[in-house]
Length: 225
Image 1 (tube, one colour):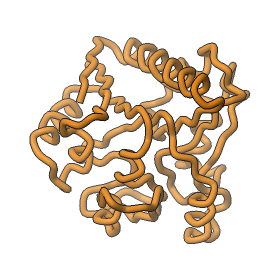
Image 2 (tube, one colour):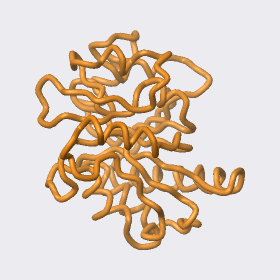
Image 3 (cartoon, helix red, strand yellow):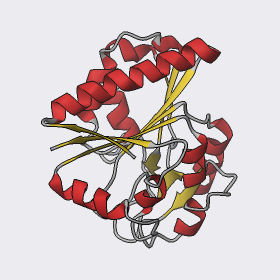
């Protein structure tokens, strides 16, 4: 991994927004369009707000999600709702949005539809939980083995966390590795300690560890103290 450390969360968010915008601009220059996959939760909100105000040819950008809870779009826990509220604003309002869940009425059909519409991202911005999960690849989840299978041809899987609420749709490790630039945004001493532990060896106890080992595509970590 490549660690970028910042004293304040606002500094990390601003720097990450600049880096992601530059990567998206490069993708647009290279092939005419760019796809960005982002994580949900409250932590990315300052990054979303900074990125939304960045000058970019947003009409050529598609935004999607790293993972999503299988809940209706209007549900308070919907990652899509968070993206619409904080990222698809300002200049970024011109971007296309590809949610992973539409009605949540049929989880299997939602997954099948998302697979059909999926576009491998040029840029992925991940988060990480205190338990070392990233995307919705939770330790001890029912479908974790498939999610961490580097040979899995599927971009997305359905997964049920062992403790966290709601069934999920998540990018697989294989699809993360097939994607373009990978970023991880975290904050605080606790998550830094989890990251350092996970970096010591590949271990399903810490799913993020699969992205922390030396490779040709390092994980770019933006950490705020």
